[in-house]
Image (cartoon, rainbow, N blue to C red; front, side, top):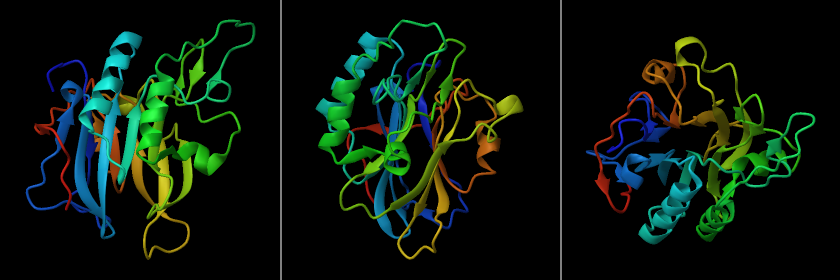
Length: 241
């Protein structure tokens, strides 16, 4: 990526039994390295895994969302994990400490939501957990927000999402972050009941131990910014297996 301070990455274990990459698979890079996707097969189903970091600066985030829309980078048959730096619904995705009267700005959340809906993508946390407040992945001293999310197909999906939740125990010590990892479990075609832990969306602030941390997870999709994950891909349309 062009900015050494931040970027996006996807980690897939070579020994994975669930996720298979085509020979000489090449990732597709967008947003100057802050979005990456790769075509794969999950239990024989062609899928695109995508990881995105949207900027904390509202103006830059708005330009990124417009670039994603114009480039058609996002596709319908995708599983998308990201730090979006805005929430779906400020009424249930934001928690304020007692006595705080300000409102979370949430700039450009609507265009992002419309873009994802236009390609049949839905917020899996809400699909699995309903509309109860919670799932806060970014827990600052002054505010808690659910800015790290996983999306996948709403209609005609090959997956059945069992659980989606933040997990504060996954990355600690040198791998700790100021965001909590969000973990989704899916039933895949022919999978036994209960699903398997296929995918994980991580926050954008992952330190240098992200590679070793991934060894304990069967498969994962995630971000790595401060770790400096430098994916060498191509700009343009993702490929399929």
